[in-house]
Length: 234
Image (cartoon, rainbow, N blue to C red):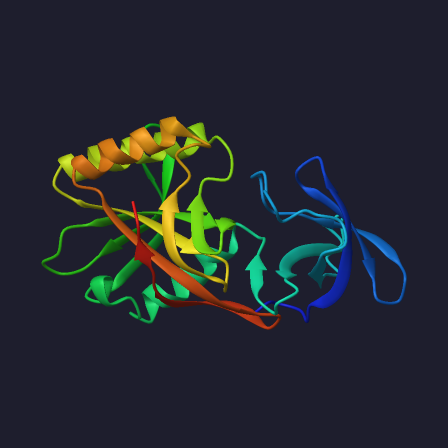
């Protein structure tokens, strides 16, 4: 997935009201960028971080910059925008790049299902059970090399797991797909201490037949792409 416009580097001044971030561009100007991330962003909102912003000239948008990436001191990147995984995954599904799902030829994003919910992707293929896929963006890492989800309590996330469990029990494929938007992690687990109810919902969904997949991302200021499967340590 390529960014629509060339990203520009900046320094984070502060993140506030969840969806706003004040940043200083390299020419000294201070701008407010949209932060498309409702989570806590634990460890990722410290003043002074080097960040990458996407400018826009859309008259319908109040803010003229969107916060897309963090560039860490060691050269690794973290993707901030929680909408990016769906865009990258759609490209991967349509190109049939994910081996366990490569036989599916019909990719349908944002399909209604469950109780007033929408599944991120519904995949269909001749002679195959429908595959319902829920996607979560993962950015938390409290131990070197280990990515965790969630970074804050998510009742919505637990609801999605409950609905996936019902899908699995009805005979369809139900898949929880975690996309790790960090280039410094090799393993994935659940942050059970942050949200025990989510962990309990995951355990129940797993017993009901929900599949778990986890992939990391290839991240640069040019774009974000699906990279490779990650070790799941749950």
